[in-house]
Length: 114
Length: 111
Image 1 (tube, chains in turn cyan, red):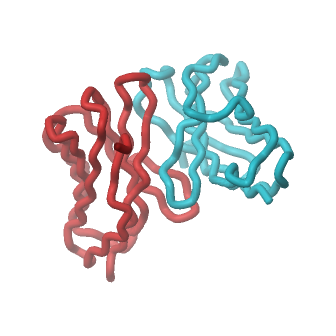
Image 2 (cartoon, chains in turn orange, purple; image 1 turned 180 degrees about the vertical axis):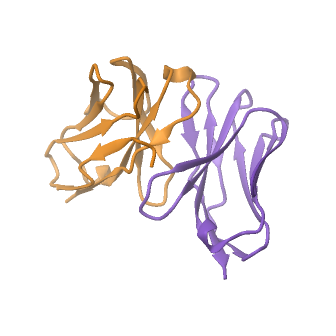
C-alpha cells in the first residue's frame, strides 16, 4: 500500500458526458501527477500539480483539466467524453515537483465510456 | 522513433531461472531510469531506480544502465511465479522532466 487513494474505483459513462476523478496523495507529499493507461499501453502523462499549480502537461486536449487543493489532494476532470477516453486513470504522489524522482501510484480508476 | 521502447512479450522463463528485460530510450540526455512492476488490473509499483552507468542490485533484482548505448535492463534472479507481471521501463526526460513510460513487457514465470 502506497497511501495514495483514488475514487471511484470503477466508472461507466456515455459519450459526451463529463467525469471527475479524485486522488488523495500520500501524507507529506505535495505533488500529484495524473496518467492515462489504455489497455496494453504504458501510462501516458496527462499533467502534474505541485503546490496547487499546474506544473507540466502532456499531449492531452484542454477538455482534460485538473485541480489541486490546499491539502494536496487532486481532481482530474474530463469533459465531452469520447470512446477513446476509456482507460485506467492513475494518480501518482510525490514530493518536490518536477525535480522529484520517486512516484507512488494509487490503485487507479477504471473508466469505461460507452 | 518511440521515446521508450520495450519488447511487449510475453517473455516466458522457467521458475528459478534469470529473467532479462530490456529497454531502449531515445533522449540521449536522460538521467533517471525506473523499473515498475504492474500486476494485471493493478497499478504500477516501483522496483528499482538507476541513475549511473553500471549495475545496481536490490535483492533478486539488478538494474543495468548503459547511457552510451541508451539501454537499460532489469535482471530477475531465481524467478518466482509471483514475478509474473508486466514490467514497465520509465525514463525521465531531460527536456521537460516528464517521466515517459514504455508499453511494458509481459513476463510469465513457468512453474
